[in-house]
Length: 113
Image 1 (cartoon, rainbow, N blue to C red):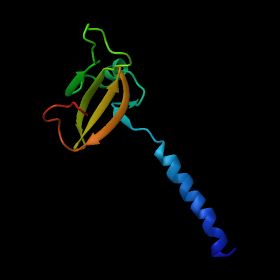
Image 2 (image 1 turned 60 degrees about the horizontal axis):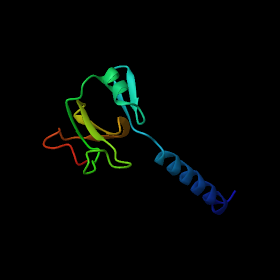
Image 3 (image 1 turned 60 degrees about the vertical axis):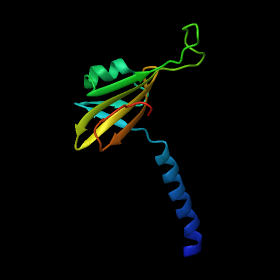
């Protein structure tokens, strides 16, 4: 088989691997359990305990004090240090939507993200 015929097959393989990797979700290990995107705050607290830092804001309110339509509560929790890194967890309406590893400790405000 010539190199010219083999190259398109290798290109498709590389493209498939790249596309598959883009759908990966972050996880956080707490003891023997795992926390993943989509988990609820209560479940994460049960597995990991209290965070070392946290902040929340929202939902945005109307002048009458009622929440605005489609407004959400945003929360950020920080766990660590673990191996020199801190895990920043972002929640929307008590559901985990993002886990980010940062090397710096939580100094100053956690929000805005």
